[in-house]
Image (cartoon, rainbow, N blue to C red; front, side):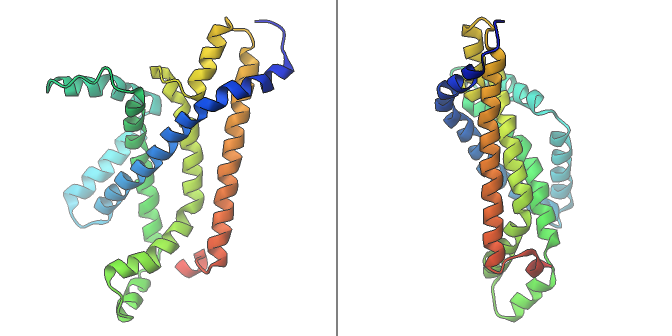
Length: 235
């Protein structure tokens, strides 16, 4: 495996950085799609339709109990087979789509619980107060519920983004060349030499991204708090 080279850690970072864009694309695209479908699941959970509620909770239970790597393989091998039954060939499409499908299914379930618990944390009396003030349902949600809900959910949302960023490293298992895939390729081209240094380079990149997300979340939380949208308003 060769002698450990400390400087090689920093020499390995520049070749990895161009592939960071794919990792970020996966993470934030999944976040947007997960929030959208998670909101639909939350709506079903909070609604009065028993069938929709049971289906939403059942979906969440099954998906949250499924390891992300297994879900990724199910989507990678299963989605093309499903579409093949209708004469549609998906074998040549970009691997990013399979990753997005898998992680959207997973994080829709996770984020639906975050949205549901956030909604239930808001005092019901604020709806009555808003109605008494003449606000419509849409105005109540936009001006009162969403700002408070976003503040309440922000810490957990930040943690979910960090987890998602790290989970996206599994994309290399189906052959996608993101930052993790590039690291594996570099190790392979080096015949296993400097594998430790390359993995340490990768850890530095993920560590830096995690710090940026955590810091950004904290700054945003403080900004909202100073703007009068703190937790004390919501409870």
